[in-house]
Amino acid sequence: MTTEVDRYAVIGNPVAHSKSPQIHTLFAEQTGQKLAYTAELAETEQFAPTVKNFFQHNGRGLNITVPFKEEAWSYATQRSARAQRAGAVNTLKLLPDGVVYGDTTDGVGLVRDLIQNHGIPIKDRSILIIGAGGAVRGVLEALLEQRPAYLLISNRTRHKAVQLAEDFSELGNIAGCGLDELNQRQFDIVINGTSASLQGDLPPLPDTIFNQGACSYDMMYAAQPTAFMQWSRDNGAQQVFDGLGMLVEQAAESFYLWRGVRPMTGPVIEHIRNILT
Ligand code: ATR
Image (cartoon, rainbow, N blue to C red; front, side):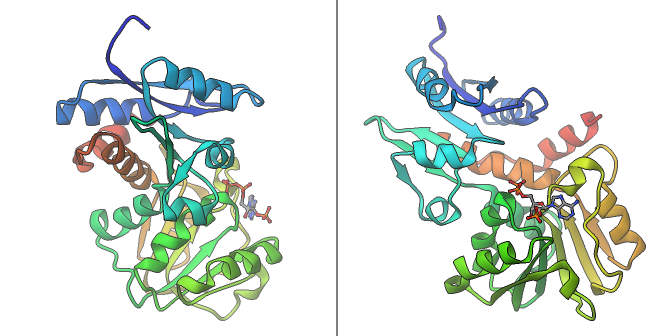
C-alpha cells in the first residue's frame, strides 16, 4: 500500500455482497475520520494469513463475517468478556503493542436497534428466539443483560437449544426447547435467528405465538420483507422489523471500538435501506 491512511475491512467468504464498506464509509464521512474500509475475500484455509497480511499493511481493524467468526475468536490474543462467552468474534482491533483484540458487537447491535430505534422495551418482557446457531449465541448475553422476564430458545434440533440455554443460564432466566414444543405459548418479542430466511424459508411455528401487541424481529434483512416477517404480520404481530438496523448498530459499535467516536446510525440505516436491491 502506498497510502498512509488507516485501513479497515470486512473479511468473509463470500464477502462481495457485504454492506459494511458502505456503512463504515458513511460513518467516516459523517465523523470526519480519515480511513479506508474495503471488503476482503479470504479463501477457506487462508483466514489467518489474510488477517496477518492485512495488519502488516496499515490494517487497524477488521469486521469478521461468515464463515470466520469462530476462527477470528481463536486468532484474537485478547478478548472482551462478551466475546469470550459468545465463542465468536465479529470485530478485531490491532492494539499498538501488537495485541489483536477480539470483540463481538452483534448483541449490542440487536438490543440498540430494538430499544433505541424501534422503542421496544425488553425489561420484563417474554422473548422467544428461534434458532440455536452462532447468530443466536452472539446475541444472548446482550438480551439477558436487559433483564427480560424470560428468554426461550427454540430450535429445529432441540438439543442445541437446550445446550445453548445451559451455557447462558448464569446470566438470566433462559430455557431451550424444540420447535414442536411451542403450542399454547405466547411471547411479547419473537426473534428469528435462523438462517431460514436466506433460502426464503420459514421455520415451522404455531400461528398462536404472538401476545397482544407483540413485536416480531428477523435478524436477516432484504429489500423485500422476509417470509418470516410476512408470516408474523399475517399471524398477529403488531410490529415487524428486519435486521438492517442491527447490522448498522453492530457496525457503529465496531467503529466506536476502533476510533473512539460514535457515529449517528439513523441516517445511515435510512441510506442503506434506500439502496437495497
Ligand atoms: P448461523 O451462524 O447463521 O447461526 P448456523 O450456526 O448454521 O448459522 O445455524 C443456523 C440455525 O438456523 C440453526 O439453528 C438451524 O437449525 P438446526 O440447528 O436444526 O440446523 C436453523 N435453521 C436453518 N434453516 C432452518 C429452517 N428451514 N427451519 C428451521 N430452522 C432452520
